[in-house]
Structure formats: C-alpha cells, structure tokens
Length: 88
Image (cartoon, rainbow, N blue to C red; front, side, top):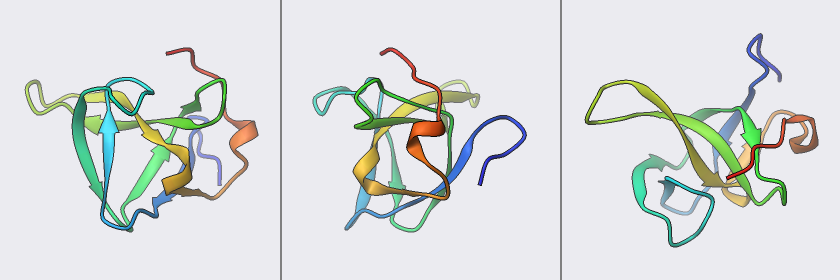
C-alpha cells in the first residue's frame, strides 16, 4: 500500500536478519540489520530492481538515513515497478 510520501510498506522475509547496506552491492558496508518480520518503508528501487531503498537510524547521528536492502528478502504491499528508480 502506498503512503502519502510515495513509499510502499514491506515486511522483511529473510531466514535470519537482513543486512542493510550503504550501497546496492553484496560487498557494500553493512550499516544495520533488520529482523525477519520487521516492517519497513520502501522509497525507491535500483534500476535492475534487485535492491530497494529503505530508511534506518544512523547510530552515529541518530538521524534517519536511506540505505539499501536486497529486494528478494522484502515482501511488498505494492508493485516494485511503481517505485521510483534511484541510481546508486
């Protein structure tokens, strides 16, 4: 379901914890982890659709920052194609 800010609700569907990364690459720095079943807001997708943009709290500043998760581990309540594309 799309929110007023254009985001789409999603639920983490990973076997364990889902790594949240600084960039849309498996080798990118991990900046957080999300538990299986955690609700997330998704704001955009990578051009190939394999990665999604979500928000997490930056532990250093306490502010919300945008970060990347692998799309295959997030069940969306909307169509991934409806999300805007964000270049890495």
